[in-house]
Amino acid sequence: MTSQHPAGQARRLLRPVARLWQSDLVWSFRNTPYAVVSLALVLAIAVTALCAHWVAPHDPFDLASFNILDSELPPAWVEGGSPEFILGTDTQGRDVLSLIIYGARLSLLVGLASVVFGLVLGVGLGLLSGYVGGWVDALVMRTADVKLSFPAILVALLVNGVARGFLPPEMHGQIAIPVLIFSIGMSGWVHYARTVRGIVMVERRKEYVLAAQIVGRKGWEVALLHVLPNTMSPVTVIATINLATAILLEATLSFLGVGVPPTEPSLGTLIKVGSEYMFSGIWWVTAFPSLLLVVLVLAVNLLGDWLRDALNPNLQ
Image 1 (cartoon, rainbow, N blue to C red):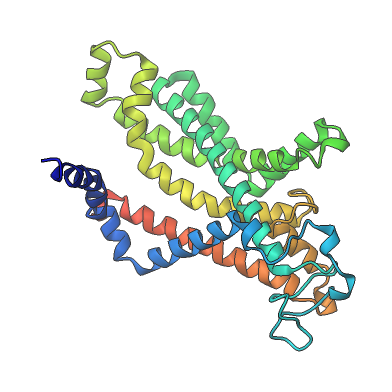
Image 2 (cartoon, rainbow, N blue to C red):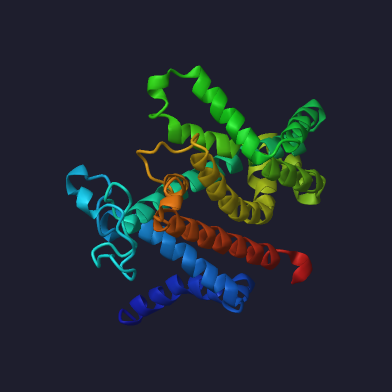
């Protein structure tokens, strides 16, 4: 009995993993090649960016390691390149590959944080609007309608400009990233709010909600514990697609000079800095960050498209 007990315990622990592996969602993922490739690319970029301190060949923040004689070196396979700098160097002698790795980390951080902020705000307002109704619903939805009349880039620029206007100039560099996260999140909450509101308005009339109210559950308990879980599938899809939008929006704002400060390299900042030297023949400083940005956004979008189809009950 004692010899079989650890084996039985191991089987019990592995049982949820086996059920997950045999689930419809994982089966759909395993049989969708572009989803597998997209997830592999996103994970590879994310893990490399998170481990930038150990993976990057050079530290772009270590000023003592820069050598002006190594500036403007082309990629290693181009004549005049150096094997020490695979993707070449910028005008300050910094390794472009290391800059891209560190820049991807910052872009992913801003993208994920802004998506989480927009998700929490949008889901909360949508849940409140759909469950309470009345003037609360009217106020939230009219605000959402006003926001939808402006492109996301204009909303982010407006929020960013107002925040910078109320703060002293010496604090702009310190609060640049939090303001950027806030401005991008404020531009994306509407999609969550409208989706959650529509689902809640249908779910709140169902029998399980009425049963929870009859047994004495409070309104916020019913909304959070019973109604909210039924909104997670579409919210997950929206969040995945919005991650690509947030990363692209961060790059756009940084390119325009109102995003990440130049001292903190992101993909948008690297593209902006490199674009200033394109006509001088230093194409690699902006080409490789742009290529990584395209690959990352495309992979996340393809992953979101697969998730939308896999979680759509009408396509099962």
